[in-house]
Image (cartoon, rainbow over all chains, first blue to last red; front, side):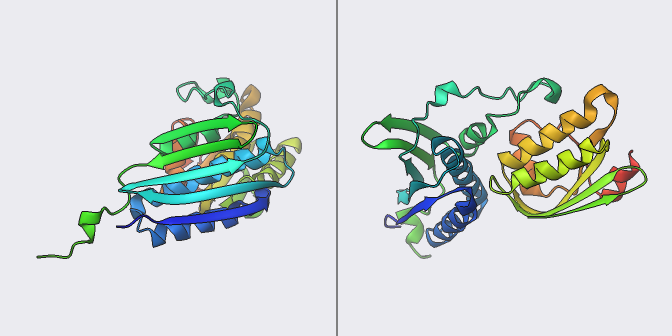
Length: 150
Length: 111
């Protein structure tokens, strides 16, 4: 399958999460992403964008640029914002083995992104802002899959 | 997201439906806190019609769960959790922490 690419650019808030989810669902359908992987992708993007609106922009409206693209059999999602710099190392990862009474509330969004996607990487530059790249591997039909029977 | 709250003899029943993401989860939290602030610490949350639940939803449920269970005064059960929500609970290690019932009646009856 030839490379597929869609973009969504918006100045948004948490209220736009449903719109973003619909964009990702539609793009997954158009790119023939494995249905078993679609929920993972939709959720990972929702968690990522929630963090952008809540933390990078502190609840105020902010520019978010989403890129949905396929490379061979892989799906690559890029989320770009110009909010406060994000350092993933500063987020305490939840200890999912701790009893709930002892667990602090928080860090679940980033944890879910890392569980649902195969690669999650963050970068920040003063010029570009925050760039998050997430990959889900082997979920897009490859070129060979386009060949018919016989 | 839609929430209905019913006070039963044994507990307070929350029936939640729709999409629970970061934009609406705080409202769920507000309603759960209204119940616990009124001294209602036995809560069932029926999630049968929840189409999507993000970590924001889980945070509100965890917060209410902790409040209910403080000093052994109550608990918060989940009922009729669909496979996608169950997956999220599993990934966050919460599936074995919350008591989850296949039906609302069983959850309510467990109080």
